Image 1: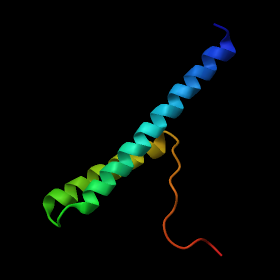
Image 2: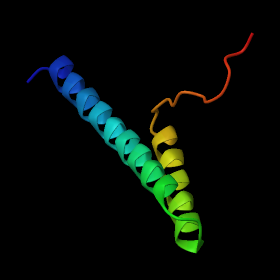
Image 3: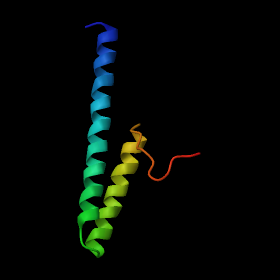
Length: 70
């Protein structure tokens, strides 16, 4: 296997890992938002936030919510 091919497969694997973290963060946030208010929901939101930060550190870019800049 050449160096270029090996480097390409490594990048592909890292991209898949980033997408996995992105999906996990989005799913956790969606589930937490559907929960009834209370301490369990608060903990679920904290975990979802931690997953989002973890995905951000790995290079996944999330869309900003709200109005676009003028």
